[in-house]
Image 1 (tube, rainbow over the protein chains, first blue to last red):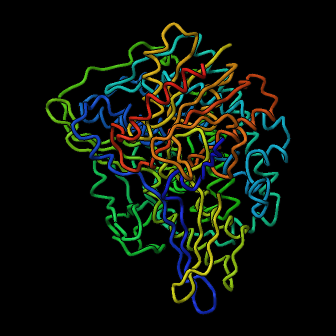
Image 2: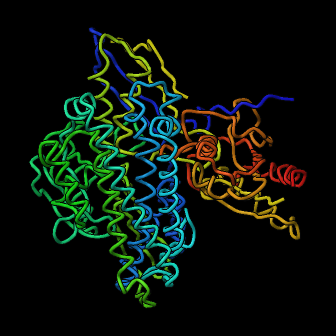
Image 3: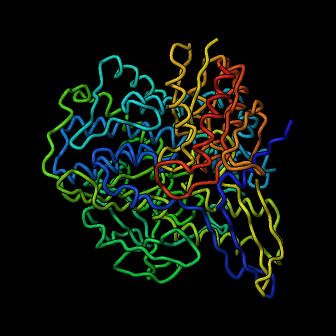
Length: 485
Length: 150
């Protein structure tokens, strides 16, 4: 019988690549992260029925279907000049909390956590969820699996389908909640609140009580002083589903605040010849290259970006944790990229508390869940995806068809920051041209913290983000290539 | 025996969606059979959720073979043994790893048999509908394999 080998490298041809250029001394002159990008969505959507966009856009990405679904639905609310009833907004937000619950649990325990729980220089075969379970114990593993599944189930009950929701319509949602479903969700949410508290305790025990880790977070080569962006409510508190887009500066003060309909006046996109990714920047500051500091328009989004861009959390337990994080790490903003993990768990706690507020809200069982739509036109929608600010912008023609679509996805918003974080980690960690697997992983940790969502297929077999690090000498000759399958 | 057949892929990423096309085709020819048919654009833990409780899971998916012709159909029976440090998307665990995690947790609902019917494709990077000719021609071959398996 013919032997079949599936090479994970070829699963997606444009695997992640870090090109590292050394100088005379063998230290890092520059480093570039290149990642595959899916292309052509804007063109693909032209001429399609506007109301199909929430379903179509949820297929853009196997990671954030729920975020795309609601950014799209909100863009349609605006395009069809309709404000959904209050109950519909609450149902959407509740479902959105389910998405944050499973997404943040998955990242902390499966992806980011292994670096800390198992150790940043542990062998790659151990640095995964199985390694975490081995170290933390099977009972904890069971809790992780259970609560991730709860997040999924909450999303599925509200969204009609677990991974690719079908509930969002311009002007509201297609499905409400019955009392049995409310009871079911309420039980799961109660358990999730406790699990989020437990996760923060685990972070305390494993990371914050370990001096080496605290040193790595506060003093390691993971610092970046950019602007920060996130959605906030009217009291400048973090909001995942709605609000104004707020940008704060290196001192933590408000630099800019705008509504999504004005985003083109506030955010521009820069193109670099070596990358498919676009690099957004703040229009008022302009593109100054891949540099941080107050003169550069580069900003960060995602859990740390959001907490930095806000004045607090809207729920009591999360607010306490917010204060504790900024108190411990020297005030707002925190510039350590590894603090994304801490911020992510605070957001997990917020998502569970907010879900609890929503599920006990009397209006959540209301049947007034949709308002009639008006004439089509132009509309923008924004949500906070788990990994950062996500904008959809459509022009809908008089027949209800998409004339033009533009999307700014979360990882694109972080493109400049991720690239710089990888470069700075390489500079800090590679000395005299020496690179090994442990160092490569610590460079990877710089971008893993952002929980980036690169081009992803949705398949049953491994794997799309293998990594190749190419090391070039001062004459730009390839001297070494490390491949991680 | 409870069997689920799942077509996997992204239906708006050209050849990537071939698994879904095949299962749609299979729906028409498998009427009357005691099967659950499902379409999924997901992997890792979410995919695991879908197969729990069945005795047998047959996954139909696009694959990239190291050496193989575009449109070649393969049947892989040791899905669980395929290991990688990486997942099919950077935010999830790989499917084999998801199964291993479940086993470690004492999960009893994992199917006894997990088979993959794969169609070899060139990776797609541009959104669009419709399949390349070579991959389109693989559909009847994959349907035959499915018939044999169920």
